[in-house]
Length: 198
Image 1: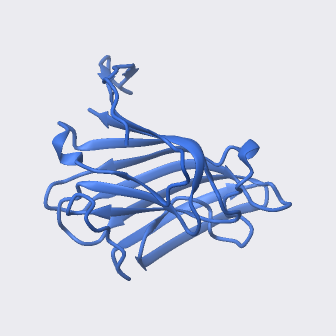
Image 2 (image 1 turned 90 degrees about the vertical axis):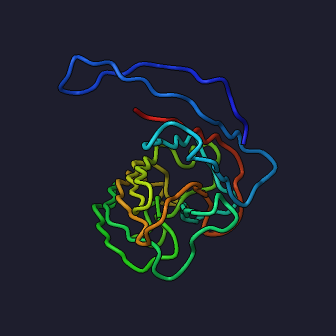
């Protein structure tokens, strides 16, 4: 993980006259085919809200889903038990609308996994995963995520998928690290940025 000097783009706060600021905390430019991309030491930042930005994040393997896991020991281990997470969300593509709700998961799923063939393509020109994942931390409580990503389906269909997903870590305990990984294979290319939100 490569740390960068913070920058402060501004954005309007809906319904107010306030201008909020967000801070770039870290950036990982993917190289060398890592199996996972980890962001640790989250509690060292003065934020309870974070945004992970995915910029053309492409897998090495074709037709794989994009996952997330959390850690309460700063990345020494990541929660992967049979009932650590719950997901609810929907995905839309030219093949129609899919909805899902799943409990007792070993990971949080960010991509469209409702139908075989809707997994992420590894063709670099199709841009992989693009979008963001927001994390809301409450020390000593559960961690809440919501994601909005787009990706192209693997194989001949080439459908564009838009996924909006809400997820929660079921166990209590303060999350201080997050891992992104694929269902199989490694990361081929792309950039993941970590922002602190007011």
